[in-house]
Structures are given as structure tokens and as C-alpha cells.
Length: 413
Length: 66
Image (cartoon, rainbow over all chains, first blue to last red; front, side):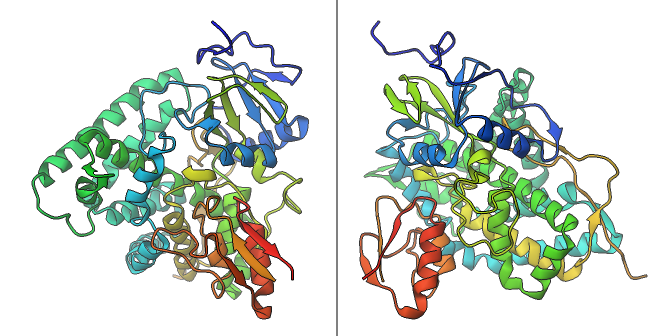
């Protein structure tokens, strides 16, 4: 059968001298554990073979992760979870390769462009302000449940033209989806049901809009129904696959990144004071949190051809994992890599991935985080972590996120 | 100093025009406008140009000293 390997063909693979590990990256851990783990893996070896699931390669350093992203013709996005080479979902354009990828991508690029985000600034700010005003008088809150989950969800639904009354339902679906994304078998059922729930929501939305002569203003579902791929309209299946991934990617990630940024601000009063004194530092604080507190433990790809890559003899069908957490803190790529540096200039991190699949929502996410910091510090300039004991974070098989972040602050009585 | 952007490599991260807003700008999709072009960097923009080049995750921005 020549050299072409099946997707599961790495099980008995002789990895050619690189260290072999057997690690499940999905369990819940103590907050911060995953970055420490990534540091240890990266400094231990640039390359591992992980015998978990069917087995896959792990590249731990910045140069290899960069090259994985820069060579999508070798590293296909058909699967982005190395422990599951054939997932039950197929997101568009996330899991589409060239040449079709860019055609899909251009349909949504403008919607999520910096200019579109700029136009939404006052809306984003208004949503944020009302949430901060709601929690401020209490002197305490669970930042994750009461702010970080709600703010990006309301902004995102607003940004794509969906009634924010469905916020709670979407939050539940997204949580259930990520139970299965990490490869935990017990999460497969909730993931399947969440995908079906989201699908039914969008099927109903498409039915409601069918036959309309022109796209509704500010309504992404309607925009997609009128969009063309080359010279044909998108099919319902394409539109549904696009809307589903946008919801999953747009709601969970920003809450996760906000949680870590605010945990940093709560525990680093010096950085907080510096930002209050010079708000122009806020974009760099956001960027540095995307590097230093990246929520992406790693990013998976499927190998399309036999090739040698950074010391590994890859075979077609192999799965690889670019350890983004390792790359973002690689001292070979960053000065003072292990420190959060406010005002860092050379910050070529992969917190939004890299290559053609660079996070579509990056500009929106950045703005949400910047506005989040501005509006929060305006009303609550001084705050601390209220919890005794350790905070927990969801495993890196999905994207890391703090499960809770209890904050407290003084309230004038 | 001259600056050039490898158009095929630019993925629209948006960090260059955030760091060097007086030198670089974006198109309607968020890609930098000067793809596959070479521009002259004014003396007062030299630092901004270096920061923009250093922060591009795709290494798409190349600076050429004259």
C-alpha cells in the first residue's frame, strides 16, 4: 500500500528518536498550569510524539509553529484537533483549504474588518458600560459569569444582527460544544446536541429570511444568503456551516481572554496604575495578554504529503499540533519572554493563529478587550481577586478559560 | 529606509497599521493597503516602521536601508 498512511496510521509509528509522551491535554487544571506545561515541553524538546489518541506530533517552538501556519499546502485545516483527525463537524471557512478558502473568507472579511468594528464602537461601549454599571455597586462579582461571558456574547449577537434575548441559550450551547471539542468522550453527546441546537436556530432564521429581495441591513445571516461563491449563491449547508463556527468562535474565546487579562490587572496594581495614567497603553496590554496569556494551548493540522519538517519525518495523514502557548513564550523569539511587558513592541504572537486562517474576529475581539478595560477601570479602578484558594481553568484541549474569577472592590457607602 | 510588504504573506492581522498609523493603513477587508508595493519611509516614521515590521506574525514587512 505504498507509503500513504491512514489517518490512524501513526499508532505504531517509530517517531525517529524524538521524545515520546502520552498526554491528555483536556482535563481541568489549576489556573496558569497550561502555560507552565507548555514552557516545560518547549524547553525539554522542540518536537515530541504524543501517543494520546491515534498519536500526533507536537512542535513546541516559535519557528516551527510559524512555519506550520505559513505552509497551509502541507498542513491542511481539514482537522484542527490532532486527537480527532475526522471530527463530526466541518466548519466553513475554518476547515476549508485553498483554493476555496479565500473565496469563503472574502465573503465575511469585510463584515469583521477594522472599519466595521470602528463603526460599532459606540454600541460595544454602550453594552460594556451598562454591564459594568450593573456590577459596580455590589463591590464584588464573578467576573466570568457576570461580565466576561455576557459582554462578548451581547456584542457579537448585536454585531451579526441577532436579538440578544437569546444570549443565555447561546452561552449554554457554546459551553456544551467545548465539552466535546477537547476530545473527552463524555463530551461527545453534549457537543452533538449543541451543534444540532445551533443548527436548528439558524435553519429557522434562514426560513424567516427566505425569498427576500435584498439583504437585511446589519444582518449577517441575510448577508450570507445573498452572497455569492464565484457566480452562484451559497447553499444552505454552506451558510449554516459559516454561521455555526462564527458563533462558537465569537462567544467563547473573548470571554476567556478577558478573564486572563483581568486576572492580571487584579494581581498587578502597578500595571493597572500605569494604564490609568496612560490609556494609550491599553492596546499593548491587550496584545501582550494575547501573547503571554494565550488561550490557545495549541492548534492542529493534518499533513497532506510526506515531508521532513523541523526534525520530523511526517507522512500524509499524520496529525500535528503547533503548541501556540509554547511559541508565544519562546525565549528564542521574545526578549523577556516569561514576563508580561506593558508596552512591548515586537509582539509577533500567534494568539490569533497565523497564515490564511488568522482569526476572522481578531479586530472585534481586540476592540472588545480594549473597551472592556477602559470602561471597567473608569468605574472600578481598584480591584482584587476575592477567592481563597486556586482558580480552575478548562483544559487546553479546547481553549483554556478561567471557570470563575471572583473579584472584589471597595464601594463608597 | 524603504518598506515593502509581501502581499501573499499579509494575512490582515492589523498590527502594523495599529503601530504605524501615519505610515500604513488598511483596506476594506483589513489587509494593509501597500501590498507588493515599496514605499519611502519618512525619517520621523523610521521607528514606527521598525515596530510594524517586528510585530508582523507573518514576517511580511521588509525594511531596506538605502
